[in-house]
Image 1: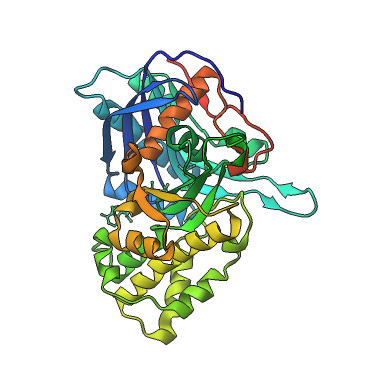
Image 2 (image 1 turned 60 degrees about the horizontal axis):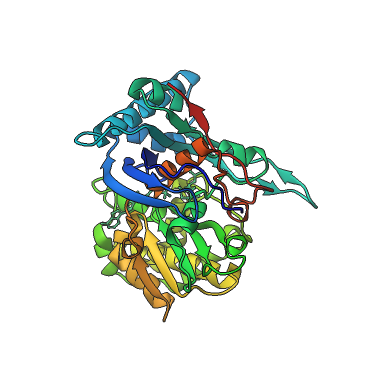
Length: 392
Ligand SMILES: Nc1ncnc2c1ncn2[C@@H]1O[C@H](COP(=O)(O)OP(=O)(O)OP(=O)(O)O)[C@@H](O)[C@H]1O
Ligand SMILES: CC(=O)N[C@H]1[C@@H]2OC[C@@H](O2)[C@@H](O)[C@@H]1O[C@H](C)C(=O)O
């Protein structure tokens, strides 16, 4: 990956994403300077704008595989684009206006490419709603969207995309690091110390479920009264059932070598339903069930590091909503023994808004003609420009 010299004038960019938790739109207003090794990002404002409850419900139903008409698809796409537009407008209040938006949109379907014989691969497919042309028109700001399509088209997974941004914002001269996102789905970027050939040694993949199963279990156990276990307090009062964790860990996904990606299509409603069925013989309390699902997230992350990393990292930096789950964090620290587990806040990058910041950077790169994917993370055969630019 050559270092590309381009304009280093500060650019004010908005990054927008709603992730697999479908809890709302994360918006980051940032000032970006530099391009790659000299890349710097200052977070001017970060907010999460919850979706209207009925829209969230419809999106979750679509993610769970409910069949809908094209009319309803269009209506959901409209509603998401409008919600993203409002997020972009609100985040600029009391600030100088932005000149660029990077909008990830809302993933509603993700089908990773699959090996189908020697040197044969079936194509992947991914769909993010909330169309960028409408956001550009309504905000009057050039908008980059549909970031995953180009990587998928050349045979990549189109995910995870954040590792390349992590590499330039969170690498360290001496320390090897894992940046672990704990969103609905978990993903990791492994970044070796910044010495010779460090860029070619970066790795990234989706580690599996993070909060998606926990959130679904909490909703089920509270009959919809709660959507998540705040700070992991409920799970912390239970005890993990290790035979179940062992059983669940035999699942094929955890043993696939990276690059790999996944989503709610696998770790969603049907999966958690099966988990509850598997748990029946053990007569677990709700707290034990949550502790056991937390342990699956922990064990799947640590198993994937031990199996697929060239070496264990010196430090793990957490980000995403799950980094606020104190029980999950504590269990991960215990499983990783002497490897320190902290959040990306300790490295000066907001753990809450890192994904939104990353899509601002990806838009900035797109405008400058700099590729955004990392082939060692997405499995694409080469680098490619990510995103469609919608000018105003
Ligand atoms: N205080 C907290 N205690 C426990 N869990 C929390 C807390 N705050 C957030 N979470 C969890 O984090 C989730 C949201 O995380 P985040 O916004 O990073 O996910 P996402 O971006 O939607 O997912 P992905 O990264 O897979 O796209 C919530 O659904 C909840 O499970
Ligand atoms: C298809 C899709 O939306 N994937 C998300 C999801 O959420 C976490 C994980 O799965 C990750 O691969 C990806 O998002 C982040 C932002 C990424 O591309 O790096």
